[in-house]
Structure formats: structure tokens, C-alpha cells
Image 1 (cartoon, rainbow, N blue to C red):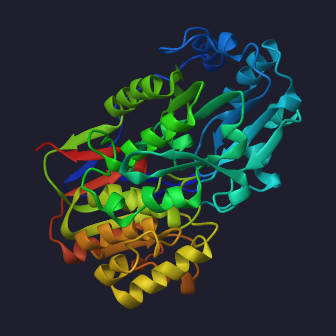
Image 2 (cartoon, one colour):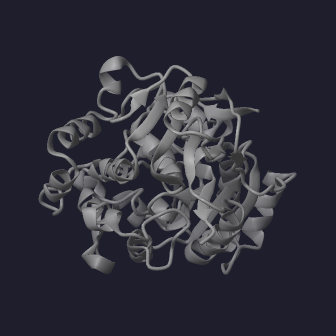
Length: 424
């Protein structure tokens, strides 16, 4: 049986035999005319007044968007949104698009068209990358739960009309993306992120995909977002072909809650037993642009593989390993080991940007060290991954079969966009 696994903007194939389960989302019908549906959602939002009524009388607006690591269909969402603001009397020069990069690298001007779409750029709207490290760009609005400071982007905080956009999908530590995550961690200061991405928060057993109740990461994001405020939200959900399947506009928390319920029903797939071998992806482009992001697919695979089983992963990593700070932390992990590494970064004073992503990798390595990676990483980067490089998925499958006789195999072509759970 040949199975196609996402890799970059295409696929890699593997020929599987034996006891095999292909894990896919329950089928969801895409919305036939998403632009019309988006316009309708602005008029009949979830627990909110219509957007036009909220926007009238406002002097300016800030629209928060995700960065290039998320496949948000901004070219569909933003034009009708900007149209409503113009109808309400907010001119293009009074609108700011704020890219919620958290601690990611800023989006270059050359990538603005890919991120936002040609039609949006024609408006000449100001586009700004958030900077968590620039104190002049941050205002202090108080403290949320867990003493998490609400340090928020100044442009957003001082805008008359605050709008958050995004994509709702399973998220390996916050439960679900979208909604409140546009604000926290998207447009917060680094001192907020030191608490939000702390060793304790990342290590909590409920900080995982499709988990909200008792999840400290979600609780902090909601708390900080409530302090920052949001006048209107528009989020979408997507199918495996990146088509819009759901539109959730309105109140930041209630609309997001409705979206999470929808995505949960269409993302979680239960299986009867742990897999000997999991063959998966990091969801393809744009999520598999570097090794840093590859933690997402590996974490989800580790939920299903048995102790010391095999994970065979595809992640193109066309932009290499990730930020230098992440690479340095992976070098430190290799030198110190997991326990000493986490101990040395367990306080706000010893916090380093990107340590949380390294911590997510350690969760996987505790479950199994039998990880095989198909990527375009160069040799020096491969040596820092803690995994074994392979040249094809078939090569990886042969290695696993040599180690485990008659393995039970779970293949997840969409990677972290599908969440596997044990039935018990």
C-alpha cells in the first residue's frame, strides 16, 4: 500500500505492508463561497454586535494577523474585513496590520504578498512586525493569572478598534491555536513570554493538543488577552487541502470556543492500541520550514508510539535548523542532558528565548530515541537534531522493520493537524 505523506509543498511516498492504520481527519465539507460566508459572519457574529456597528465612530484600527508559519487564508479573510472598516469610515491610512510573530523571526517585506495577498497590499495599509524585545513598542497593562505580566504591543493597546484574525487548529501546548493566541503570545513582551513559555507551564501534563480545561498555557493566554481587550475576532478552520471549513467571528472567547469545539470534532481520531511505528509529517508547508517547528509533528507522534518504538518523520526544513538561539540551546541540551538543561532554565532570570521548543523535543526523546528524519538539512545541522537522517521513507520503514517484527504501523499524512488519542 502506497501512502503519500506531506513534505514541503508536495508529498513523499512510502510503501507499507502488514498491520497498518492510516489516520485521517473525519471528512468535512469545505464552505462553497467562503467570502460570502465571511461577510455574513460579520453581520451575524457569535455573541457580538455586527462588526460595522462596532467599527462606526472609531478613529483607527489594528488588525492582528499570524506570521508565515501558519497557513491562514488572509487573502480571503482580510479584503472583506477592510471593506467593512472603510464602510464604517476608517480610512486605509488609519489601519495597521500587526504581524503577531511572538519570538519568531520578523516577516520580510518580500513575504508580505504571500502572507496577506495582492489585494490587501493595494490598499497601502501600514504593515508592522511585532517586536517582543523592543520595550518602546510595549505597554504594561497589569498582571494575569500565574503572575503573568500583560505586556502588550503599544500600537494594539492604543488602537480604537482591536481585531484579531487567525486559524484554529490543534496546538501541541495551548490546546488550540487561534483566538487569544493572537494576543498572547503573539503580541506580548518578552517578560510575558518568560512566564508563558516557562519550564513549569510547558511541562504541565495538560499543556497539550485539544486540551483546554486546566491547561495553564490556555489560562494565561486568556487572562492576558482579557486584559488587553479585543473588539472582534475572525478565525477559520481548514481541511487537508487548506480549504475553509468553518468561520468563527465575534467575541474573542465565545467565537473561539465554538471554533475549538468544531475543530476538536474534526481533528481527534481514537485508536485502539499504541503503534510500534508512527510515520508522520510536520504538516507540510508552511509548518515544516525548519527543524524548530518540527517539534509539533514529533510531539503528536509521541502520543501514539509505544515506549522505544519508531517515529519516521518528514519535514523539509528548507530554511534549515531555525534561529541561532534555538541551535545554541540544542547544543546545550546535548552537552548537559535533559534534567540539567531544564534546571538551568527554570526561572525568569535564566529563561532564554526558544528554550520551550527545546523542552518539547525532550518530551519526545523521553518516549523514544528511535526517530528517523527525512529532511533537506545539511550534515552539520543533522548532527544537532538527536535523530537519525534517512534518504527516503522506504529506507526508514525498512530500518524499523528490521528492529521490530510484524510492527503495528500508524501513518499520519497530515502530521500535527490530526490528533491521535488512545481510546482508554
